[in-house]
Length: 479
Image (cartoon, rainbow, N blue to C red; front, side, top):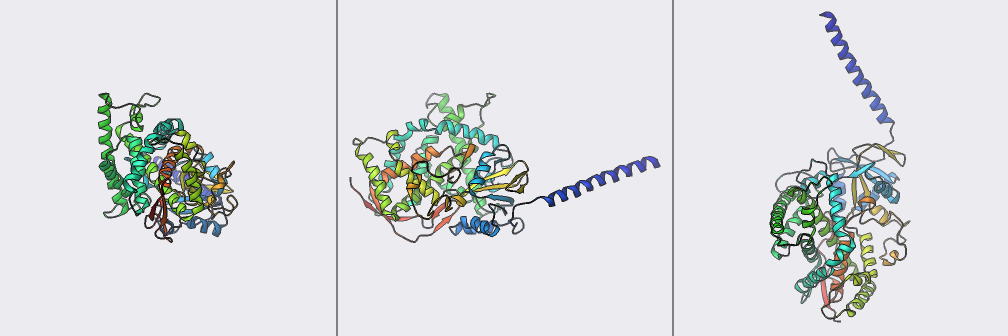
């Protein structure tokens, strides 16, 4: 009995000793690592409030730039949304993150985004993201999109006629939202009922306002309102999926008419089809990306064209040449789009100066070293767009609006990244290009405009937007 008792105490002591040794070794190893400079800020919230205050103040890049200067380092550590975040700055950082996706890093969303956008925020969605990209790449490749150009042009013309014609003054941002959301609903889901589109768009506005917010789920908070809006959207989309399944079973719709039909009919390598909720979880982020980022870009294209008459004149000249080559009532086609080179360079310069997104989040899936700094597995990483887009080393006179930057080979690799890079390059780049070019064509061939508030401020919530929505005064231009 005494021997058994002694053995038990011996084993317990040995177990505790091993744990203690492991703790001490781990602590010493942790202390010896060279972590990026930075600070954690307040408990739990970290520096989130500092980041949000610069965003709401119209200068989210200041949060990044101030710390780059303070630490004199291309990489620094902070704490955002309850997570340790390492910010990578410059083309070398962009290249590292984009090139090591799937080996050292993987895409990541803040908890607030996952809670709002996904039905099961706790589950891993990396494989789902790959499936979604596959669907989008097949549906949104240029040759597949060409057949939609005429439809997009028709919708754009109807939008201009309904919301812009015979108006002396308009507010650009809400009208751009109406256009982009009507287009994405028609192109992706074949929804063209204006009442349904308007109702759905209103819910998406609430959803978007809570995406980058403090994740406190209490009545009245942006986060709580966004969750409720996402639930309404999810219910609506489930009903649409059920209706589409019935229509397809009765051969009432084309099996190739939009991305919803494509998702319903495509199986994985095991022959398994996506569930209705899986499809909804993929459609909601897709609608957010296709709708709001393009809205921001269109709004700022109109802003810069109002501020820069010589740029307006050059774009109008290009678009009028295309219009004058068309027959009465003839819609745009792929050849016309290819002629809009200068207009697209203008849009690219807009996205350099006012990118729709400030960067992209990743998560470290392995411990690794970058620039002599140790990065821990599980830490969140952020590829900063502003650190290169306004860097004089990559863009001479970076504050000057100059579409000619994109002549020839254009910017150096990994310096211009409004659509991301590497294997995660935004699959919707060609769709966004069509949305923007077709809208600008129909607007600039009909109007000239001026800003009503010349000094209107800029704010981010979470996307950039003029604080008053960009009110403008319209002046009809006749062919």
